[in-house]
Image (tube, rainbow, N blue to C red):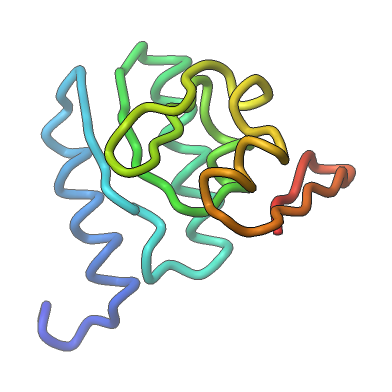
Length: 118
């Protein structure tokens, strides 16, 4: 029963429903919301593979900077509804640019798996 599902299970169900439509273009708003880290990574890897292997176009809204940098090919950085920058994650997601947009000092750390934003 859907009523008995946890928030993460409901989120995964909604994503599966969207994927089953098998459209060429998909849009997701915070698809990792309510998911544990294992399911977040699985989902973002899965979506990234759809783009590469099946040539799908997928627009994803993410507030997790590390995920945005790690799993996307292009980033649009917005502030107040206006585009601040657009390009590859490495071009757009600089410490100074992110700190300016979020009005907080963003730290960027290199790990063996890639950049981590704090």
